Length: 431
Image (tube, rainbow, N blue to C red; front, top):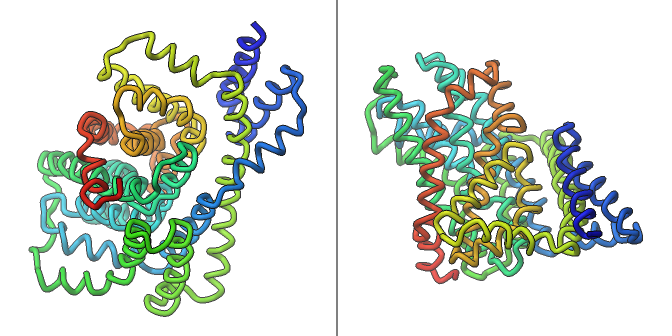
């Protein structure tokens, strides 16, 4: 009885604070404190678990990846990647929508952040699309949904957080596993955009030119090479994810300041300040989620949840759909990092019990969380897109409905066809 009441205190107070719009880190920490007080455990446990949560060598990669994304994102490379995407797909019907989606794939491999993608590319592409005759809400919907490609395409710091939380999952395998699902999401969104563009008679771009494509590739090479350094280095065993991230930061600094000249040294200090703001939020979440995870584990909540979920059905297909449903609901009320930190220890054992590989499940978690970033009431990327486009959130949500369908189709393909996420890591010997 005591354990049941403690669980109610922990989860009840947590969800109450979420609905009262407490900052997520405060909600996680305060509910854990209330649970520990109820159980009569020493509060020194809080400090011990917070330190333990962030005392991880692999987590050192997170600040480096965030810094790399900030440097490259503000170093003048957005315009170059847009030009490269335009050379690739701008000739199609609805060409600027296709450019938006492909540019997000390129930029996501550098920033690793859907919010950064929306803010950086959206501020350029949404006005550009509107000027060329595209509807503002359509332009915004394309921008925010395609920004989720950046969560799947390496290097994504959210994958590092998942690997650390799951335990025993290779960061290199996760990085490789994200490429094809990211491309699958891009193709799905492009098909949806093409259908709408034909229906609304959106314009085509200039004719395809191989000469222009080669020119833009040569200009963008320095930016895209940052991703190669990370992925090839980690997968090839040349260095760890943390070491590769540190090297990528130095490389990004050189490219942004000396090659593209999009940043001066004053701008570098400003970017580092922004990185510290972002990083402080991430690390506080990881630290407080560690206490919450400790409470969940000592109260055997993962085991109870697994028994409850598997008690509903033993059908692996229904269980896989149920796992996706739980993550999608959590995405509506929580941000990405806390979902990964809190839900992974509970749901991963269920996923492996029905034959899902931890790497495949990691890709599912990341995409589910990405969809959550676009859904009210807590969709951070949805808010950013609405602010950039200066449109009401309700109008953007309505325009995004067809793209939600594209993302759900991609999610189902990744869930039921492991080859999409595991094929590349297996082929290259990373698993």
